[in-house]
Image: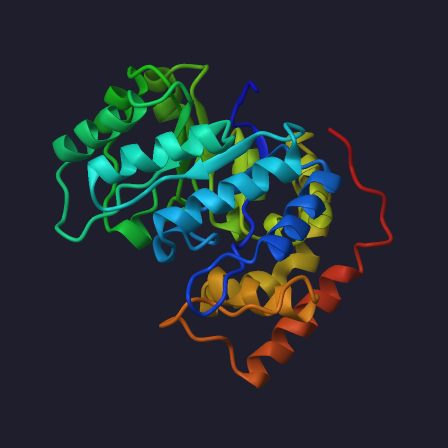
Length: 306
């Protein structure tokens, strides 16, 4: 399947028991929900998907479950980040064999990495399969920031076709895109994560929204994304008002904890985050419930179309 890394890429959580064994039935339900909503792609084993907490066996099991559920109807982008280069290569090959359509790679490390080390790490993994690869630039988690020069070097490597960027500090997406596009090429997709800023990123010219909330609530997320793609700033502003309580919780607790709480409140799964990450308190769960209630007011509106 051709993967363009454009539009809404929905990142579901990976429900698993306390021993890290994936709940394939719950995962299948989440994937079916995204497929039915017609998201542009599904991002498996991203940060929300607990990739760093799962064994190689369980990660392969996750990809197989998603691929068998989708049967090729949606592009499946799979995270393969891990500490060692040889293990990342093994995960990339596992993902390809299990049915992935593209790869997502973060420079996971314990020892801080140099720009040169990350270049060779990505080059080795990109060269290990035939799948297109998206760079996962997530400095808040990996503590590594890609320089413009490194992104340019990586863009010349066959199969590296996109980057998943963090929100710029000043939210000046247009300036960042105007700086990067001439150097990365028009066919190189530049998308963003950080849900509360991504509609604005697309309004200002970003190619894609790599979304945590879309992995759980794809319909309202698609409505927001389609408005941004259409350049309808007024509709983006109106729809985002329904998301604001949820964005506030994401900023306070991190989206990982909030999405687990929301998934349980919606009875989509009854699993908890992997320890040592703790679930939200009863009072904070109530706040998540209130945020979901606010967002549910969008349910009666017709979904926007591309």
